[in-house]
Length: 472
Image (tube, rainbow, N blue to C red; front, side, top):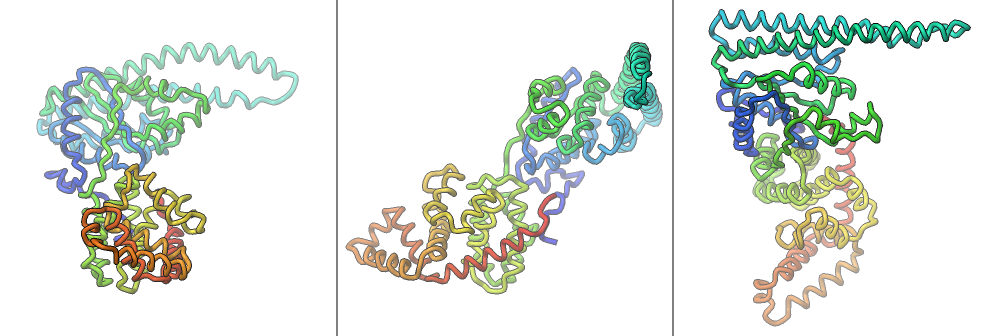
């Protein structure tokens, strides 16, 4: 099915085989940094939604798992559990066999140490739960003359319990960390000698806010053990919004996260031409263009897709959405019109990136000139359209769609006079803007006043495509 991009295959023996973004170099450098850490550390890989954090972690783990003990913990898939401690130890138990430890004696010691770690964690949870239940049920009192006495007795009882449980909890946490240290030390007796145990935490910013906060707390208080390194893939902005749900809109998010994160790293934003090539091939766009008998324009569509991705700063996920919607448009197209599909790609790209801007274009509240200026401002590049094959075609299409037939004829007649001027061909070679205008009026002559009807047809199809659920 070519409407969604399947998960990138990451072969164990060649984890970067399908790497289209040059992740291998970045991962190698980060691995080198982590391998030199001699203290428990938390590294945050910060990048916005849809920029490939999950694939980055999967490739990273696959590339080092024979050299480092490591696992991926998907926080979002586990946030149904009452406490992250439970699900994390459960995931560690499942992964232990994948460490490929050949010495049976060491393997038994690791399993025993992990079992004792699990038991120590269970002891903490069993002690914490009754007290939490007492606090939670403290408000369930009958409203009569004895309420004050009941509240006083409850407060005194809770205070005493808090002090007792505080000491017990400290001992439980210490016991847990001791057993975890034993586990890490036993790993040092294997092929992983001298290597940190790396835990990749994915989808933290998609969790229930209380679970995300609790997971950070557990990492800080329970897993702050020498030989452990956590790598958190986060969208810092989104995670900050989750924090505010619990602590209020005025909280200092940056200060709060500094309590848990030792090293911040901004993931390199990569969505270059290789990724566009990969999408057109993998998602079947090339095949669809062949079906419409416009496959001779494959390279032109691909270049247009690349240009749009760069101009509009589309993330990897936004490029996937653009390709998915364009493929659906091609499936709805029966003719072999190159212009029809080319204009659709531009409009779909604008809708993916700037819904409000797209609506301005559709409602006709923006002139062709202002539309081009807006795209120019989004791109941050001066006179971008002069350097693109499809820039002049888009300009012509917008004029044909918005202008009256009389206005179009008048424009064409005016340009025909320019073409008859002396030394026009020489000027055409030397003047970039004149070559652009030549492209505009060549296309406008082909479209005539049919652009208005074509525009309506395109918008109808794009609106239908927009009613599909594109969330993932």
